[in-house]
Amino acid sequence: MLQYSPHGDRPRAALNHRGDGKIKIMQPIRIVAIPTEVAEAVRSTMRAPGYGFPAHTEVGAEAAPCRHCLRTIDPKQATRILFTYDRFSGVESLPQPGPIYLHAEQCSRYAEDGGFPEELRSSPRTLEGYAHGRRLVAQEYVVDGQFEPAIENLFAHPEIDYLQVHSTTAGCFTFRIERAAKSRESAR
Ligand SMILES: [Zn+2]
Image (cartoon, rainbow, N blue to C red; front, side, top):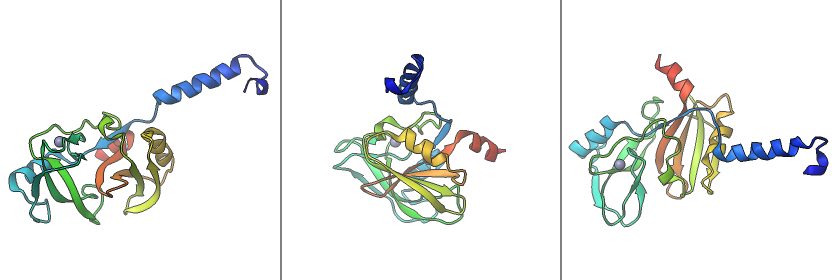
């Protein structure tokens, strides 16, 4: 690298830039877990919201993320509820229901400004970038836990309004990501 730079301080600046990349200053994002009202309604009725299909309670043999707190549901210990959920609920009029898990016991909804959920970082996930109208614009498969650059790349597409995060291996919806600034605009 050094021989390409006419200035002694250039390479150091480049290194600093790469170092900052690890801390990663990115545009503010909102991590959108399922609403608390949905979690509470499922726990109290044991029915899928909007569909009425019976929900199923079990202690799972394998770890799975709770879509409300975005933490791992402890396998062989914690009770979880499996229910049908429209993954486009709240953003689109066109539904696409699928199965998701929820802690059977009360849990705290993941903070929207909490950044990418650390407990979900180690498993392969697909980020799908959608334009409103449920039009898939681009997607990224992340296997190394480096989600922030992928999120940045997708939000660099001006057409993309929001991201959906899925388990790459199981295909299930995990949570949604929005631009924080965009969310404030649409909330007006
Ligand atoms: Zn939970």
